[in-house]
Length: 451
Ligand code: BG6
Image 1: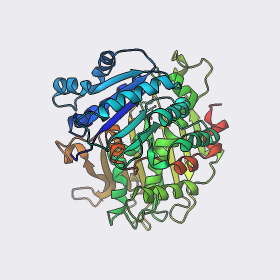
Image 2 (image 1 turned 30 degrees about the vertical axis):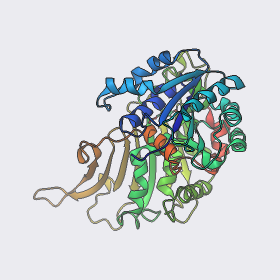
Image 3 (image 1 turned 135 degrees about the vertical axis):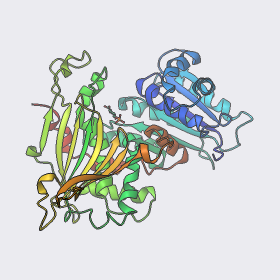
Image 4 (image 1 turned 180 degrees about the horizontal axis):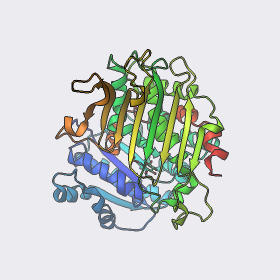
């Protein structure tokens, strides 16, 4: 573990759901693996609720322990001791001045390396307060930009409701912070098999000649959940499945599946290629969109009685370029379905001049299962073992659990938070990706409601 100098991680919205369920547990796992050395790192929670340090620690405690933490109780207590709490509002100077004072205290303590203080602000907050919080940070909590010092902010989707509001939000934050300081999290970019897409596509001779319209019939990117809104109806109903899942998570996956090879692995070069994919997506046709709402959605007390927000959507995107012309990218997402799964299915065309008449048995297909149980498998035709010369569809299967026994796959948030500390923006969404990923007609007008 490299020496990281003095690092302050400030979780704003510390008493909220995202912080409890994702941010603090991810920090805890990083801590357990030695990425957050206690001498150098301090963690601050900030929120409006007036509670003590211990009350915050008690609220978080129950979320830290999972089957992944090896020696929970000892580590949990030590980790919790790193956390201090400051309460204040999101739009007034007082709280942020207090926060700055608290952060500065440990930055000047004798253990800090002079001149190396770093401040990471994680906004586990609704986007409506981003502008005021960013203003307050800028005004009262900025690190002086001496050598070795930095201030970074981490924000979460949804970034606005439509192209206009997204651009407005981007400009408001952009006036206060430079792009290299802004980390827009899309946690799908932190998933193991999403990160594997670049390697798979560009480090394997197998795929290079096949990955195009001549060989691929269609690509399906599917997200299903077997639970509904579960108390998150207030948020969900305002955004719907398209803004919650498709416009960000699935679109990011689509970019990685469809993009050209970047000239290098530099974050900017990768993001340049993703933007080109987004710029090549054609306008979506009405008849290529299906929306639905699960039965019982409106029974959730946090959902308005007459809501027509979709909880299910299938959308076909078409990419107008040399590689993908004519290949439908079918994006499907739904809540409260019969299973939980996220996967990419690449379906190949039929074999020309098929002498085995195997068409009916199914096509070649390459499946990348993001979750649960990460796996990649290739469906292919083989001879049915035995005396007859008949064919059967079988699988070449790489199941991570079997192949990488004993290896723990990091949680998406854990990996992404570590990237923010290291200053690696490869797996974060750049401002222009946001802009070009908003096919305004689709995401923001009539299609976002169930008729
Ligand atoms: C979030 C959505 O971004 O992703 C949730 O807001 C959804 O509605 C969640 O449940 C799914 O994440 P994962 O990692 O469990 O697939």
